[in-house]
Image 1: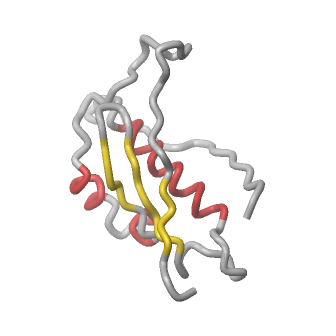
Image 2: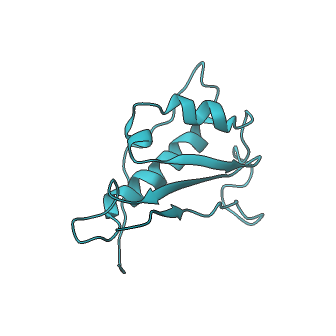
Length: 117
């Protein structure tokens, strides 16, 4: 593979009609992208090249390169890498919704179906 490509997941918002309306739908803290990215140093997140690139009041966007670190031996994106990106964004966003002096949010289970390569 001669050139790295980036995989990005779009941000999502809860709709006004969501059954979750009224629960914590916005971050308690401003997402400090530099601090979040620095906190991930020497972890799976940094080894895969995952970076938080944008943040709003209730959303995050991150990228992960599609390169030798994240592809299968067949040259296509490894499904586990895309799931790692999704779980990373979910965990970071979850921690922005709680008082981290009292609670911590981590992924416990994730399920993904990769229906197209």
